[in-house]
Image (cartoon, rainbow, N blue to C red; front, side, top):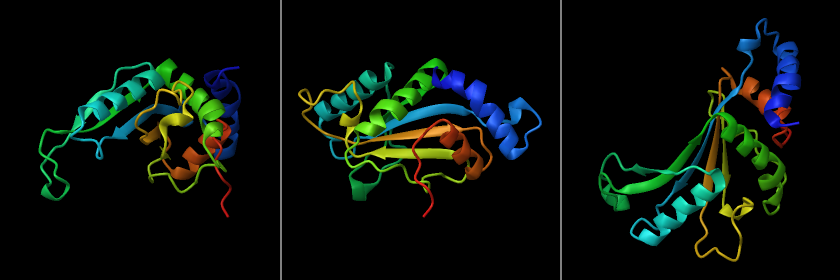
Length: 180
């Protein structure tokens, strides 16, 4: 059963019972998943920018968008309008497929993985995961890698509180650590 199907059949009723929602539409849902790579270390290197774009394209199956600096910061040698990152926003079927791949394949491939921190919620029901190396994704083969870089994955939910979002992600089988 796919992750979206299990959300509809088992997660929604469990969350309705747990939080006392009267309407199915009040139950939190995952809205978008955003993948982001900052190109800070290789800003002057065109090959690094191209590598990061190809990485996101292979992982998501979608062409990434370049993010540009809004203003100049002399201390970081950033000029207004220069490319500082690349990002992809996933919605719908691609989002659910990516989440399933993230939970079942990519996270178990991370070296020394012991679960995700429950402290990575932003206060509005969104959760961020940082990967130090992009090799955790199965589309990237270790033979082709010339430059390693990190990836940030943000899961945006419709939850009003972090507690609701945490319950949603735990029911979707995201491996969150227990509070110690």
